[in-house]
Length: 230
Image 1 (cartoon, rainbow, N blue to C red):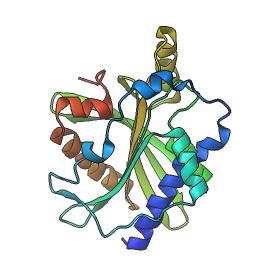
Image 2 (tube, rainbow, N blue to C red; image 1 turned 180 degrees about the vertical axis):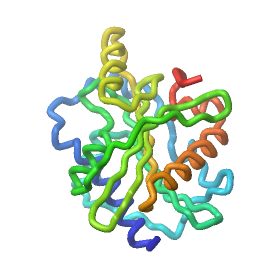
Image 3 (cartoon, rainbow, N blue to C red; image 1 turned 60 degrees about the vertical axis):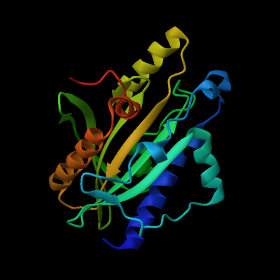
Image 4 (cartoon, rainbow, N blue to C red; image 1 turned 180 degrees about the horizontal axis):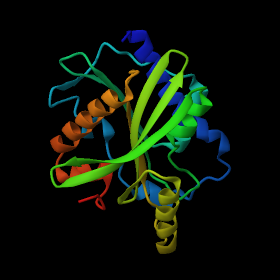
């Protein structure tokens, strides 16, 4: 894959994260949010693990300043990296974390992000990825724009739970609202440039398993919560 293509992909990903900021009309009360510790994505996610390493030759193209500001409104932390394995296969990883997931500020779903950038997005299925005695439910998407084919795997964590559907996201937000809590949350998204979606999903699963199995239990909970599939 050309480095320029990967760099453009990272830029598109960052701009997609910013797209929902245009719809924000309310700002949250920061009292509870500021009391929360950031999860430290840069140190949480290792740069090398289980045969994967960060491709340092891929230099992300920074989005325009106005886009950066919109991203900051929605998310407190963003991590964007490209990983490569010994066989040359690459995975593009984006994790975006926000301290307020009440509904006023919330993670933006890839379906609408990619569509807003001109991609034709197909919702493939939901699937459980098992690792050890645990598991996480992910959503599969397939995005296409011209000759570019990009299989996508993602999940969203709201509070202690992972969700894939909008209904699940709303239910977790509702439960938190009833208790007066402001849940934090993140979106974990990986993708690759590959026309064979099923082959790509196999690679995605391996990357996810390798990463989650590398992390300690308390570190893993920051990505998938504590109410995971068993």
